[in-house]
Length: 279
Image: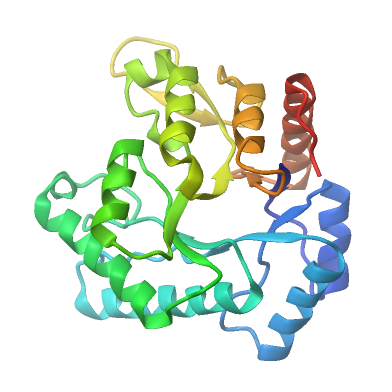
């Protein structure tokens, strides 16, 4: 497997960015500039990745294509199209977004998310983005979320059938789908099921940990840094490696460079326990 994550230190050139990447020990990266960058800047960073054997695992889109305001929704759909074009240009594994929300928070819960109308709109949006680009190398992917499509491996499989596009593939975030006490209690089995059902379609993975909060109801399952929760991280590395030695596994949602250093070290140790090589 290949390990990667965000770069939190500032940089203004591929050379500076590469120094941070090497310090973190990444062999997989999130492409560090957006589609608004100049063509030359995009080429320079892409060449830096090629010259240093850095697999570009993700290009992030991260804008709400379900926004209630029609102008905002159209602009965000266009942004996703341009980011997918960027992913195709630089040879990334995927361009990733979440399906979005019609609520006040673009990544938050809204009661109508669990409706056929919203599901159909997710399918329509995904097709529209992919069909505008027609990528041949990269994929468009939706990161699972606890309260929006797709929130289970079974629903992800169904969504792939309904979208019906070869360029729609899986970005796996098993932690985001630990949305019940049953899934948390049987987390290893659930994680294994995710890899078993979705394995051949997975193009990128987020490796995170989870911890049940102390106290009484309501149940609260918190995302925490790798090693600070109860999840079987050696199992995660083993399952990821089973998809191929170049499978990108990313740590994320950490506050600073030092935290990413620690998280990367934890994931390398987890891989070592599982007997898995990390590039």
